[in-house]
Length: 150
Image (cartoon, rainbow, N blue to C red; front, side):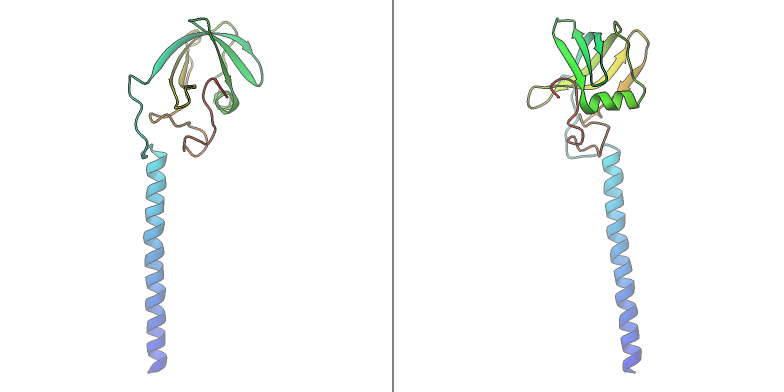
């Protein structure tokens, strides 16, 4: 009788552990899928926060692109933003005109969210609607990337 009770207790514990593990695995999977779809505690970028700038491509180097903005200032694309653009086949030529949509982060750095090459009609999205980079885990810290200031 004692042997039977211990066997039943062991089965109950085993099934309980399987159920508990399944529930936590499912919750973690749902949380990961939601974060991959852009659901986050961050706030969406508003239309007022998005700034469009027109630029002409200056120098194209392997480690940085120099863009001359319409107001005469220079914007450098480098680091993870540059790597992500090249990996996704977005490579402008010197003299191309680009339409850049971005926003200023908390430090006042202009972060590029999307680039459109008006010369070739190519475009690339670099950040989601929350301003998080599309490379890495999407935490917003993964690539430290953006436009200028890297």
